[in-house]
Length: 258
Image 1: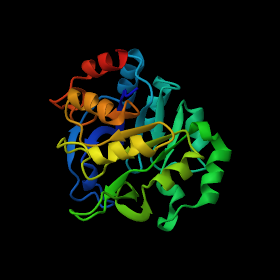
Image 2: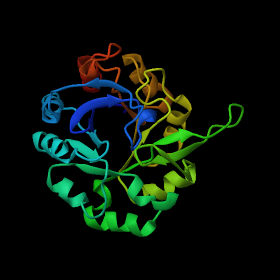
Image 3: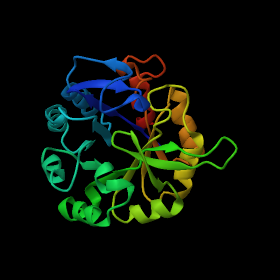
């Protein structure tokens, strides 16, 4: 059944909400919806108190490792972590308290799936501890059927791998869940990619969480309806917890409890 999944997005060691399409290596043009002096652990402790599991910590660039581990220590087994994860450091984050690690860019070097790297990850932590982030951007023309290509490197690099039924079935053999940000609408609070949600509900053989564009509690109900309860939803910038005005965190907790 569809559930609200929380998030802790980290940039320069601080909890922020960022417009996903504005991320770049140079930092120029970065659009930040929210920034707080509250620690990552504060948010993790809140999620733990309310019994909200399966949220994700995303490290957007370097300098976020300590903040991520502080959150994991505050809620052992309750949060996933991603951003710069590879076979060499994945177990380090599991040992620090992550239920799962989230990986994208490292298994797609040069824009193609590296099956040896994927196998290394599975060997290091086990399939049941791995979430593959298949965050994507639309690549179809306005009058064409919907198509999405995976975006790596903090959503800056569009690669040739598309989100198709075959891709989902293939990768599901090596992981426990998918996390999919619709990078085109991430952080904009201007509506979700309903076609992507429906596609994931129809074709993902494992649990999947969608993020991007949610702006109201009604969006949680909407995702439940159009996905048949198969897709979970992350709400970030619209949440009052992150300075948003569209959704009350307490209402999301009640939605999960119901």
